[in-house]
Image 1 (tube, rainbow, N blue to C red):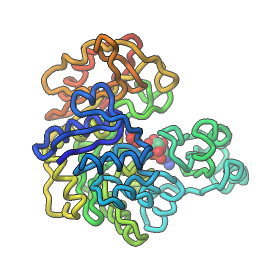
Image 2: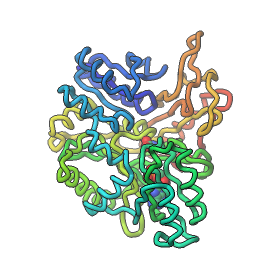
Image 3: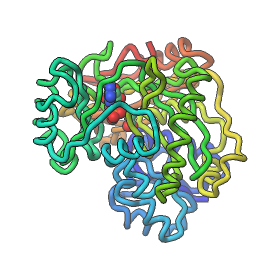
Length: 421
Ligand code: AMP
Ligand code: GLY
């Protein structure tokens, strides 16, 4: 069957490569893709938020399967649009997507269904959030507090403030940072300490299949310094969660979530992403995403040995329980190479050297690239490339990935040297 992937980053490039490995995938399209994706799929110029145009394209080309990469089309209801036209898509419905598109909806949902999550309060405007803090009901003056914009904010809507004064400053600046619509409501949350880990699952409405646990590195600088980014690198490794922890997360978080979705009238079908803090009192859920992460996908999919078309078929037909999904044992890592200035204003148009000459086993996923008139790859975004590999253990995997990174260069290229360390 012909397949359409929606999005234009490293996540979508990894999805395209995984579909390319399937003997069941016919022609592969990507809307709107990038210069690297164009080597694996036919790129079509449809914006990811134009959900009618996406469905028109899928319908007119008789696409058998569409995979939505990012959260924006999901929040706009692309899943409902495709379902209404009888088109197969991996795209949770608009109702289900509220688990990501509204932090206050997600927190209330967790509370209704007994999913462990940090204590919180929702304020119906930034001014009320400040009043809430000043009234002293939420934490004391010197305690850290987490400030979250309610709406989608491309990773910029969360500030971990070290005390009340900083929290108030974060609230005051939130509208400017993420836009007034996303910052209309503010969630204040207790600050937890522990180990952060993400766990993703394929979900068919009732059943789920876990992927390897994954860890992102959000700050721009080595040693977790500097501003937050969309993610500078990821690893998968068995040490991230042991068997007991996986059981705890399954019982305390995943099962109540899927039952909750059914009880509230929306079945969850698609990829479910849990952002977790492992505390001394067990797992606490910080966030849901209703999709694959970027750059989590790159590190996860290089370990997938099963056929992604088959997995999507099982999610759609509700038969995940009887399908076995094989993963390559061991570890994987993805190191993001970013342009000068990222995560602020970036410089683009620099010629990328060395990306086509990788050691055996290393894959380069393109996130922000274009071709210049001489057909050379140039930088065309903040996150530019994701150098990725799987291996038998984390140390050798990281050696392999960083040997690939060492061959690539352009003026101003930046990356973290401590992914997985
Ligand atoms: P979120 O988008 O809600 O996952 O938040 C983004 C990041 O902020 C997380 O990956 C954590 O590093 C941090 N964070 C969010 N909520 C909390 C919390 N309650 N306590 C400590 N850190 C948090
Ligand atoms: N890397 C985090 C995300 O995709 O939301």
